[in-house]
Image 1: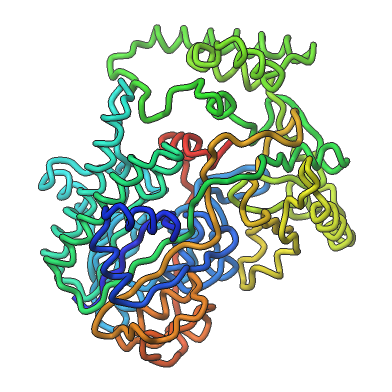
Image 2 (image 1 turned 45 degrees about the vertical axis):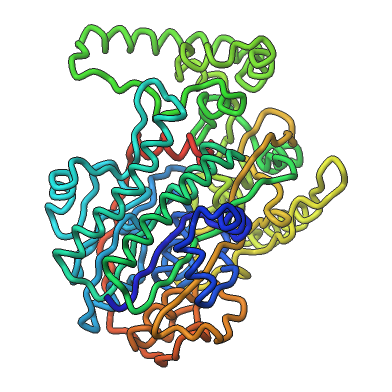
Length: 551
């Protein structure tokens, strides 16, 4: 194996230094100490579904086409998938140069595309993903006595069981890679460990759980290095993750109070009841919920439909008297009833009472916090656009000025930068992204899309994404004394290609880092990314909600 790329989702230097001090990660620590390392700047937005395609294509979202967990068509949305990535991955480029690859658990790679080697998708894929070649997923389940894209907890939801299953999932990533590498003998290996990020969202501030996850990942990295002895090993993360010490800023409520957004009840893209109560620990996580029985009868379905209709009408009646979820939640939290209501109140009741964005009537809105931007309801682009095209620039400038002046209750700026998207994205797919980019001050403040309550809310032990992740590399083609400068996620792909002597594409936004000999640049052959397909998956959507990505 020439080069092994290890992905540590959400890893930051502050976390690595902590586990280094505890002696929990000797293998990763040796790569850092013996090789070249530096903080790795992520893109905007610094979130998994867009940042990993930037890593494996070397290009910004305006070129590869993925900006967020969701893909929008008018006011409707579907989940992002690999068909939305419109540029070739590093393993596809290596295939053009007769190099084979094995890729395991990398986000935004489902459905898998053909190349010389094997790929098992990771985050954003459905529980039974389309792998390459066909039949690989069934092979993994058979030969590894089970393989899961997402670790499942049992119905007790105990912390011990939850952590053990996370550690089991980490081990299975390495086992899957070993099995496939045995079969395909790859020149390039790429395995990503998602739990380094997931544990921070699930157990924020839990130092013992964090150490256990990083220790398990380190053990698997050591086993990979011992077994495959790659000439080079590169460790990267798509972004960092640390504690936030600012506030929650509800962008859509801010826009509503400034006349740019209208609210409604029961609208599209509304916040969810589970997410609303989750802040107080009032709901059980999706991974701990009981699966529905295969023996559910038609009578039960009919009863559920009747209950759903009653709940909807009850919610609509309360909404007429201005009684909604946002007003009820503080009360039920004070009474200690959040957990009970989260389990017994139907979603349909909340749909009918909960305030959300009236997209068709609004001038601008934020769709998800992870997109880090606003979308204008533009005439001729959105189905019922209200912003005339000849006023687009002026309205956008108003919004940039308005958000730039937003401050916390203590008078501190919310954003370090608010700008037109053209300052951050370039390429044929810029229109897929937000019209206005909003970058929180040092990512101290958590953006929210909620509407109908206060503009600000307190954060309680809230960990989330930071702009800088990690880069470390060691090997025969790595000069530990070379200059890394200020490496960016765009630089990872051309740098990995250079370890094979493969030139970067002239259209890449990244450069070959100074620790590897530059192989020059070239113009890629014509690339046909194929047709785009829409994805909806309730299981994946629930997981995104549980981690706070979808509100």
